[in-house]
Length: 265
Image (cartoon, one colour):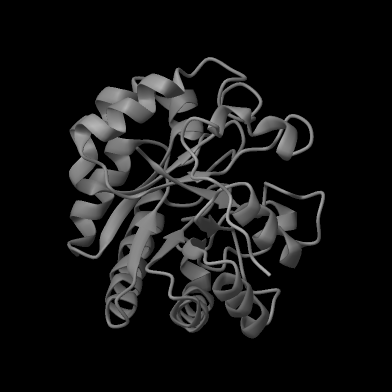
């Protein structure tokens, strides 16, 4: 049975961010993830993880100006110093939160950019990040995205990610496989996971179209989750979806998977 983590950037948004940890626990989640922790002080995050018995499964490296459409800076030759400073900041948070995986959004190609230079910059930055994170026992992930939601994003498929990792040449890099993004770009989810399980470090889910909860779209998640079990995937599954209504109203799909809620003082 998969281990599900609530993505607190997208779930329980009816509540202030720091209140979402308790909501996740009461909904039966044992792990949490979110896009970025950097707007928050470390101590309140740590205290909530401890109080509610939650594992911090994942967060991202700093990814530039999100509100302006930036989706990472790892491929940008003029922002190498920013990227590497972001690695240090991610290590500071991940170490305190006991988070063993950090995801890298690689970035959007600027107009008229030289693809070879972008790739060379990306490979060098990922080598640097993999080494620095590895010193602290943290694994680096890279995530392909779909080009409808993220036009110009430079990493768009599982095979592309696999070849990138091979070029980086580090054992400390794996794929963050998001079923929503890859359903749009590739389809054939079960076979892709099975064929690339040796390189997949984390799985995320949302249905398509709409990026809502499982069961609202075209993906057969009962089959997909069973295939993860058959393939031997032992990692977490991040619920990175946009609830179609209130978060709690859309959690029925999870009933046959989630553990009973726990009582905390």
